[in-house]
Image (cartoon, rainbow, N blue to C red):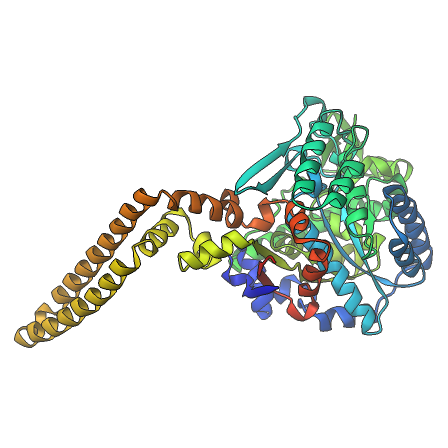
Length: 538
């Protein structure tokens, strides 16, 4: 397998805070506890202290969840290891249709690999995937985009007003899923994997929810790796987390002041806060009438929807009905790491930026914070794309640069070989003549040097423009560049975004074969933290 590593700094649209966290930790260490290294993760894991009773109860709940998803022996073994004292390497993502964007699987692979490396180093560790079932933005999970025969194919379930504001993990897929799943499964079979097709149809049925279908698919995909799945909607997990909810309410004023100050500190340092915090913010949502509503504070009153409570009343409600509460984006990782013995969290670029704000919540409520490690990133290049990149002397980075630059390069490379050689020969001769002429003119009058340089650049520009026009003329004859551009952009820059954020991985795995996940897992090593790999598929 051919692959080429890139630093995340070489990728388009990466958050400044994330890049500095990876490359210039000294600049951002005020916002984080530990640097993104395996050494830091190992050190944190060795010092870990976690209540035995909480560990046993969480392991019991997770065993029931994973059994319901159809988890295999390796996952059950990892649950036993968790119960007996293993630390967790955690990651998570929204429960997107048909596994969602590829990076959800990349996160899981990274967590699996990091847990294996810690275990080989003498620290018992297991991988855990937190399914973001409490999220209420159904529009983000009800569609999936596949790369199919050079074009983008969108699978999408219809939206419903009745679903608005509900936790997505509770929304039933309904009969509309079955023709979609059938069509997707047929494509997977046609691309060479009846097994993946079977996984999909077994997981995505009318009676399943977004959460249960995603869980069943991941349980099958990661059966050999022993990935533990975690659904935070479980009432039992809310009961375990209730003391932390109560602590967050009791400390609300202090926390809000610290979060407001953190926002100012980030702004002064030149970074953007990911979550807007106001004087009325709290860390909780309330599930009222099945709708997830923001809890706000004013004086000593708390509100959500049409309901109002005093602080004591709300604290009491978190004790008696904890399942009616869920954490916001800044509090969610803290709840996760209260429930789990998390030594390291595998995160994407935006998530790592979130943690710069969450750090003050960790410090106030939990007294510890895991090491955050960036997930491995991949851009997969199939055989046809690799051939096209060679044909036009391109790299993947040229496709990321945008359509206009890409077309210019492809047109320039499309000039017939004979004519191209003539262009290259004559351009060199013209440049040589212009240089000699410029020297003579400058000797005559040194004030004309700038004019000479401008003239030289204009001539070179028009020569290159002529070269591109010759390429366009060739394209009109062959009619290929537009089709080739569409193929490359659909695969490598879909919707003008990174492949891993836009495309589902399943079609690639169907063509790659059973070893695909294992190959990607090897590249997700802690020794290669901070890299994105351009991978050519066999």
